[in-house]
Length: 434
Image 1 (cartoon, rainbow, N blue to C red):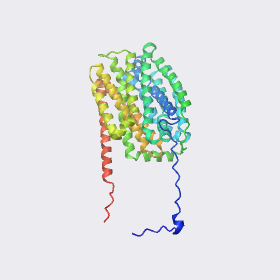
Image 2: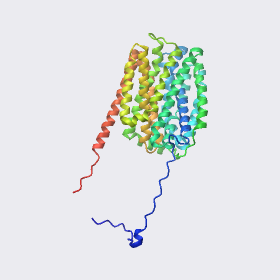
Image 3: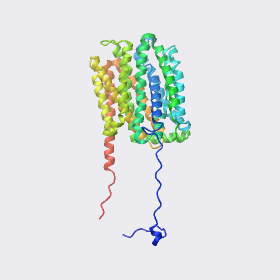
């Protein structure tokens, strides 16, 4: 077949043998990578931010029996001190993500932590359950600037191959914050009451916030976005039109519904017969969060072996096994069940949240914000529904709610697998040459 003409002049002789232009090497990727300069500082800074976020966000969860007793309210009413915080975060995470596009990830994360810490120092002085719920809602709204901005920061500043690991470390900080906050408040409250306990968490968060601001490297790949509502609405609409992103949002919400429901009412179960554990021991039960730290930080390796959907199946199966084991009357079996629930939840959350950042090519802050919004709506729903189910049917009622949510995770993941296979079969195959 004759070669197609390019329209360029033809050269002959010596000119034809001239060497082609030497191609310049591609510029080195300046984003952060494990072992590189700034990566450890960045990881530790966001780890501390995760510690402060979860310690503040769930500072009253392990103390709900004491809050109920102090204000003379039921478990479902006291659970609003948790639901209000997570609900405030869910409502404000999208507007905060838009502000981060304009003013920068680091700036917004710093401001969010500062306001949340200030409110946290006021929480111990709440004179009524209503005031406490309002303060917690404001605190949750302030913290909304952190999760979506953090994942967007990582997506911009960290090399793609290290993204799941980096986000896993941030999620691990969440687990350490959730664990330490509950353990510390449990023991402090046993001696001095719940007000001193939440005040202690506020002071710890101050230290984390200051260290975070000093350690986090300035962003080098941030591009300032627009605050125009029409642009934001179009970006959100595009994300919600993406079936894969919507499935990931639903998976995050359902996983968090299980986790929020279990840990909101576990204090009531362990404080009652047949266990009748004191407040300090109940708080120490949250040491199982260390399992979440490990499972979140190793989620990248799990996804590398099994794929993202395979990892979600494993996370769902692990959570289910934990829920069923927790029905036993033995304290050892209940604790083992909590270990499996925690490991499954944090692994599933790390995989789903990193998949959102990987899937969204534009408007990453908004994509992450939508995930965080769904995630914390799941937390609010789980806290409230878990308490209602516990009131109606005891621990078995809370477990039934959790199993229903895990069934939703597995169903959505199966649907995603089927959609992927259908799309692969539908890819046109080039006809063979004759």
